[in-house]
Image (tube, rainbow, N blue to C red; front, side):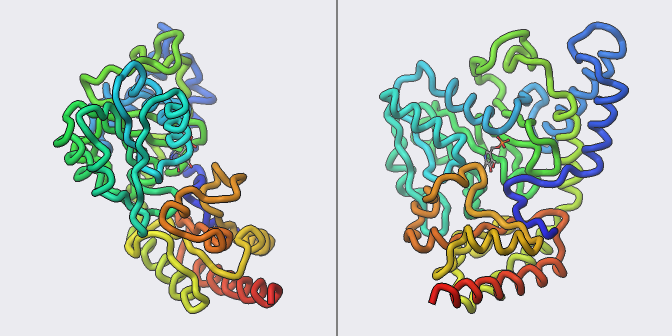
Length: 372
Ligand code: PLP
């Protein structure tokens, strides 16, 4: 199998498995219990919190573990906006877990302003700044697009937003950025930042929300008061400890030069067939391509029969026929029909990519031959 859909999820790394094993077999106690063995579990959770906080340049008390980034985004949107008068400003490239929250707010009558994208998938700064005003209470801008790999300059954009309205709460979805580019939250200038473990070699069903000190966010899930009252529910200890272990491993092994070489190799093989890159030329681990004259879904099936797994836009919205983000950057219905998403991970190497590229090329030629 050559797995080229790492933006949808990743293999759980060995370090994460080891960390998980310990808290599943020996130290399986509830971290809220008061006996000594449970305290050891609590200490492991707190150590994971410190590790991830350090990676984000945050204080450990600013990290709230959640069940996934979808929950983190829902929490940020739902409680970051509730009871606030004014408008909210949202990037058109948000992942569905943020975008759908914005749509829901709009249907409740809140003034939601979606910001246009540039043709390379980044946020259009001019449009953003024309939409932020003294009544903007919340803004959300995805850090790295899960569709195109386009990276937004969050530090610059959040500074510009706050120059217009210092009270605007700025949230960013950092799921596809974490461990790949700098995600030091103080430098980014964000008030909230969402992350997911399974994109960096951790377990599915584990995420977090960074909430800047001093910002009170009412809980989305109430109950026993875990996570300092911010997020109730017995902690997903295996998810949390393996999140920290995976993130440390990922950062130590992510080789951006190698990723760029793999990306360039695919582009150089497929460009002669007319493949168009959806996104900036300097993106790295996510490569979205539109290939006219094919149906991407059929190509995906053909490749999977040969052991090559690629994505079609966002896996989370794979049932939707259209692609909201590719439409927003100006792609036509035909270009979207033929769009694939190749995303690289720690397990990929150049040999695999050479092999995959030649098979993808042949399958495109076969498909086009069948259409004519
Ligand atoms: N945000 C982005 C940018 C994503 O790519 C994803 C997953 O595809 C999510 C949020 C949702 O993450 P989770 O699967 O942890 O809910």
